[in-house]
Image (cartoon, rainbow, N blue to C red):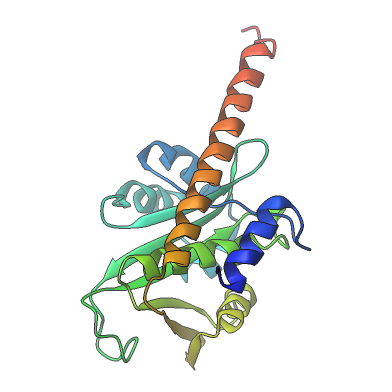
Length: 220
């Protein structure tokens, strides 16, 4: 018998929940260009909230180019027009002293998320976090960690909603969540979600390509 979270997730896919479904897909190297466009479109305030500092464009380029897709996982949410409107970066590292107390694993995960202004208020950030958490759970990671400015109300809301332990100091907040071991339900949920998201991604990509093909080309 699936637990309530699995039932609720299938209800959201069927369109029977109060909140419309937000599909989250794992991204790859071929998505770097779209990721770059997403980050470059963030204004100074949003860059500060996402990175803890106002990164200039050249450092945004460097950040995206250095993402190691073999080591880390990047999740994305695409709009109907096939634009990335949400990106969650899940980075893995050994536990640092004083961080994520209680973890007995060799690795912990750190999560960072950004959402385009056009997609806010739709649960995109929360869904990206949920996908990151279930991926960690299914891959023997027992602690998910986030660091952000205390003024980042969206991240603070996500952290509190998830039941993360939060420590505030000098304008910054450290939050971490201890995850349970995987279950058949959690493994099934992640597999189905990736499959649905991959189909959605392909349909939107093909629709975008078809639109470009049929639109009249600009004359030089």
